[in-house]
Image 1 (tube, rainbow, N blue to C red):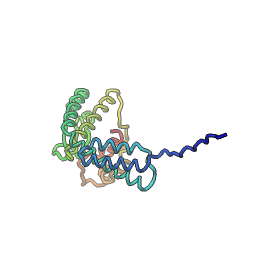
Image 2: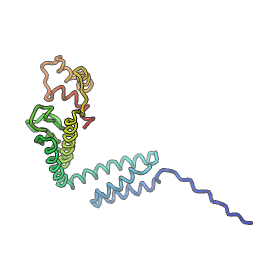
Image 3: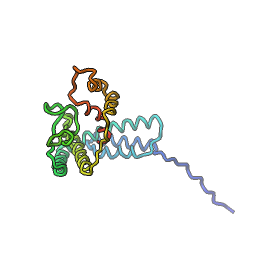
Length: 216
């Protein structure tokens, strides 16, 4: 009597085959060469979503994929610059209505704005307007810098109306500690050790910058 021998299933792993990853990488390169950054980025995202083996070859492929993905996003930002600028303008009008303050947009290097990019809130600065300082270069990323600042104004406005703050209360002692940790020269100015040295930004702004970067 014959018996049907069951075949032992082929062992499988959770890793994506290296050949498949290489094919996706080649596809992304071809699409990039054809001037299709959106499709190329989609192919690279499949690489990122794969369970990549932890070996030297895969590590190199991932590093190349990250560089290619960054280049794709840069090209998409250039292609979508006009649409992004229009969307940022609409977001600015919406944010201004929500905040109840005019919103001024300026750029790093302008004569009448503080050093550094970011947001200056009206109630923090004692003024009648919010200020968003954007990076001047690269130009095609300006709408995204503006949108980031506008979203922060919206969030800060909602927190202010709720009687809350997104930045924790920091004592003068803690500010000094932050300054000594991140900006020793500014700390010396604040303590009076170097009275003849000046900085464009206030020591308080410098001290709280690390916290504001976290909550933005």
